[in-house]
Amino acid sequence: MLVSPNSVGSQWVVFEIGAVWGQHKRITPILNNVSYEAIAPLKEVKAVDLNDFDRFLAELEKRIRRKAAEG
Image (cartoon, rainbow, N blue to C red; front, side):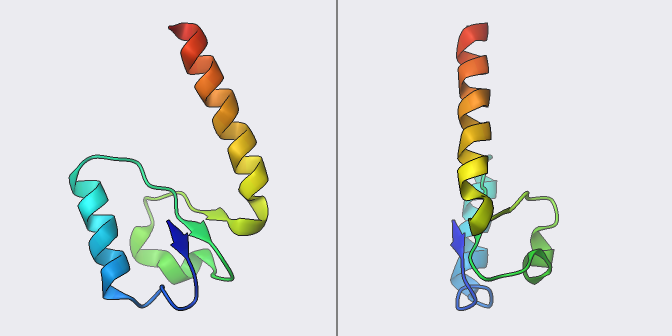
């Protein structure tokens, strides 16, 4: 989910996050020009700054490969 300055106050973003949590799925907000404090109600969710997205993808790839090797 991409979180922008325009979406921070949107009731639909909160609704969508609630729907995902209700299905027990993981969510990783990608922050685009938004501070982590702006999504304070989502304290339990780890967010990624858009500038760190490449690093996030590299870490995710490592986790997937490790999980696949475990079998």
